[in-house]
Each structure stands twice: as C-alpha cells, then as structure tokens.
Image (cartoon, rainbow, N blue to C red; front, top):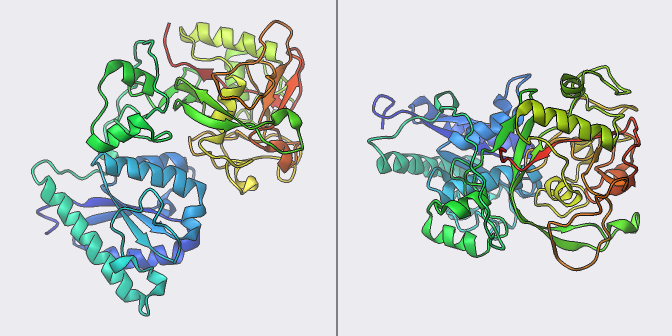
Length: 457
C-alpha cells in the first residue's frame, strides 16, 4: 500500500500518562507506517496551549479509524481512560466505525474489561514489559496494527476517506418534537451520531449488541435520546450537556452526615440536559444587568451570593429571552446522578485536587469555571468551587428503589444545595453531600447551574 493509492488512517492513542515512555516507544515503531502515508497518529500531548483539551480528545476519538488502548494498571485505574475514552472507543467498535486494538503494556488483570474479548497485542497478549527484548514486542504490535489498517482499507476501498477532524462537517443541532413514551427499565443512550452507549446493558442493550444496528423506532429513539443533540448552547454562551436516562445508587452510608443514608437505587426515567459549567458572572449579568458576586475579579468565575428566589427570576428572564425553557434547576436526584456519571465512589475521581476547588487549593475564593478535570459526562466543577442550588427540598431517604424522586416544593421550603464549595474540606465536597438552605438566603459560596428537558415550547 502506498501514500499515492490510499489516504492515511488516523490512529488514536488512549493511555495513562504514567505510561508516557512506553507510548513514545510504540510511536517510534509505528513511524514506519506514518512515513509510508499509511497512518497518522494522535494523542493528547498534541493539544495546543489555550485549547479545550476535552473537546480535542472527543473530536479525535470520534474521527479515528483505529483506537489503541494502551493497557496497564494505571490505564484501568484512570477514570477518564476507562469511563470516557475506552467506553467511547468500544461504542464505535461495536458500531463498525473504528477498530479497537488493546495493547498490553504491563502485567494486569484485563480479561474481564469490556475490551477483554478483543484480540490483543503483542503476540499472545504477552505484556510488552514481560518480553526479554521490548523491541521485539513493539515489532509484534506494529505488524498487528499494519494488518488491521490494511484490513480496513480492503473493507471499503471505494469510499474510504481520511477522517481528520478538519474534514468532519459540523451540523447545527436539530431539536426533536416531544414524545411521551413508556420507557424500558435499562436504557441505551446513543447521541445524534448513532452512538451506542450501554447504561446497565439490560435487554435493550443486548438486542443492540446482537444485531449491531441503529434503533429507529421513533418512540424509543426519543426516550433514549437518539434524536437529541449532545450539547445545546444558549445566546449567552451557556452550554448544556445531554445526560442519559438510567439508574444509580444515591446517597452514602458515611456517618459524617446521616441525611445522606441509606444508599438506595434511583431511576432517572428520561434524559435531560445539565450545564457544562456553573453559571458565570458574565452570564448572570447578561440576563440580570448586575453582578452580586463577592469574588468578581474574573467574569468567568461562577456567580454567587444569589438566593434560590433570585435564581428563579434569572430563569424566568433567560427563558423569555431564549423563547423556550432552556433553563430550570435540576432536582436533587438529577444533580447527584449527573455528578456521579456512572461512578460509585464518594468523589467521582479519587484525585480530589484534580477535580475540585476546595479549602486545600482554593486560596480562599472561587475560581474560573472549567479549570479542573470534568467527570465522565463532561461536566466541570460538580464538586467544589460553589455550592449549587437544586429545585426541590430535602427528601427523607429510605432503602426502597424510587423513580424520579423529588422533595417538597411548596413556597418557603428550604431547598437543597449540592457539591460543596471552596471553603469545604475533602469530606465536604463528596458527591452525596447535601444541605437545606432557606430559599431567600444568599451566600458567597452558593451558585447554580441550569438544567433543561431540551424540549422547545
């Protein structure tokens, strides 16, 4: 195969930064394919300064034809590698959109992972570091990658095209007409690009896995979110991310705050949207004309010092300005479901410094939104920075499973705040932490983010 006869195929490296040296060595061995015009390689070290790194990763993960999973204990322990990159890679592999190749770098138990049934490299899935001569291991990997790439080209020689991000057309999101349906118990939630995300992998997921096809039943597609764009953006630059329907374990059995227990199963029966970031001071001022915040050095810091009642006025004005209900507050249950993003730990990542502004790193103030790592669903600052208002009041937990639970909402009821803030300890920024606050109270540690059904009026 020559550069003249076939265009190059993008190869995406999914790896832990602890394996940087091994990734670099692999890249050297694959350079022969690059020089021949067979492949181009992409990894996160190529992200330029000032660029939104998560968006860059998403773009290349969605356009690469070959995705290399560089497997090690650090890869499996990384929430981002496992729950974001690997998950999306397996979706595209199941859809026939990309070829996923596990490359076992270091000894680790990996066979029960979602990619465990795929043919791994090097030969016999022997970890690279277990070879007496690692160059021989990388030669085995290179030959395997070359065979996979040539196989892809043979499968579609007539219409094969290079898939660099610059060539991917961008289409404006299409808003679906609302549909009322009776949802199945375990949903599968692809986006508008026909993604196949397994939430719980129950009966619907098994059907999709078996037939490998796109669900086209309109009612099912509406409920699963197939007809909904992944993100929506308002006229004031507020971006909301689609959150899939599903189930999770809500609460915590920690003795620190008994109102968080007992842990119980909750079903969120419909997809919804939630702000990618906390509402900023600039966005508040664009709607309300003022900035009440105590920390006002940067317009991209979260707005704070706003009461629940103040937020209701903001929501009313923004929705009138947009012409549809683009903003409301999330329920207490929706907030925790979105914050956990499929995880069950006290924090959605063990490295709290990497995901939250709290007392140890905040230097006594709020910080610009979006500077810490997002959770697996692309939401920033769900823990720390500022507490976030929820729509409803405190609900007493029981051990029973509940569907779309909601606390009291009568006028004057104290409302739930979530996520902790810049003043809190690590214990105070856990995913399950919650407190009731009077709806007319203001504090320089309380802000909010918008939620939406995504349905126009």
